[in-house]
Image (cartoon, rainbow, N blue to C red; front, side):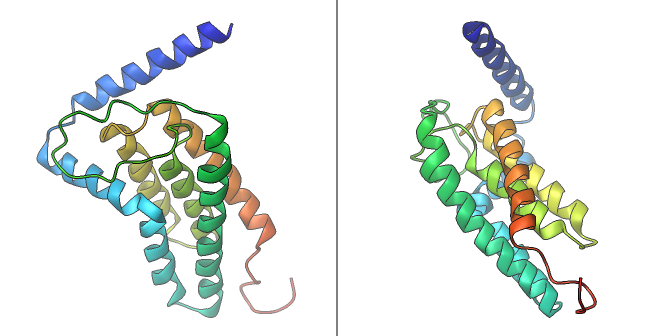
Length: 184
């Protein structure tokens, strides 16, 4: 049963990688996905978006702080704990890449970029009209890791799921103050 599951995951990963092969090599796609991958390093894009949100109000400043705390907690949990249980090998590093990338040192499973993207999108999106943009950016950052051949597609899907759970937990543990400033 386990061997059959691993085979199914490997087939899925190969199929998704083949689909991305049709897009790889296009200058615009290369710039978008390599740029998104770089901006996802150390949750940079999420800290920038949170900082921008913090300028709107005190409540939004609280939301931004929650993203920063959430990103730090997510990184420690995913990169320091979860990945230790899964020693999955990353796709081969020695492939032609049109742009430089930082070489990750941790296990491939789950994708930390996907985890941080979706946990941050969930935290940022609460009571924000820009929520579709946060999830669109999260999707591009997460999928960029398959595009640049640093993760398998299953790593990214698992990271998205873990990120959504962590974002929901973050909302519960660190709720935003009421919008009107009054009692809940």
